Length: 126
Image (tube, rainbow, N blue to C red):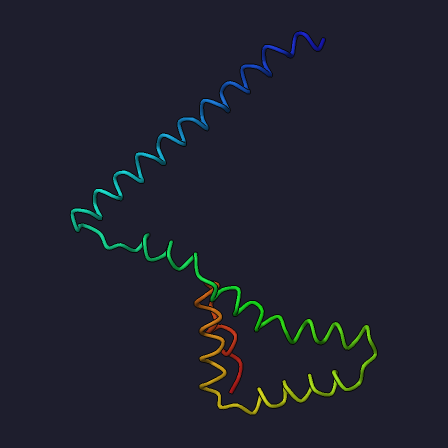
């Protein structure tokens, strides 16, 4: 029984391998076409800018900045340290007291870095 399935499995595997090779060739052709259009000035250097942005540390910095209160909250809950819980509560009160434009700016920066729709967060707030 297993021997009768072997040709089908091999044929499927060969088809998958061939498709992957075709995909690699098409991606290479697309990259070449894109580079030639960039060189001739038909399109902007958006891919180059996007790639250089991916190599920066701003995403990691913002992730640490946004995650810090959550890490402190977890630590305060599991360590039963009331001082940390009180300071964390005070942090969010102070952040809530910041001007609305600053809160929106902060959410917008985080949203632009991670590609989120930050404006939807503030639709309900008045």
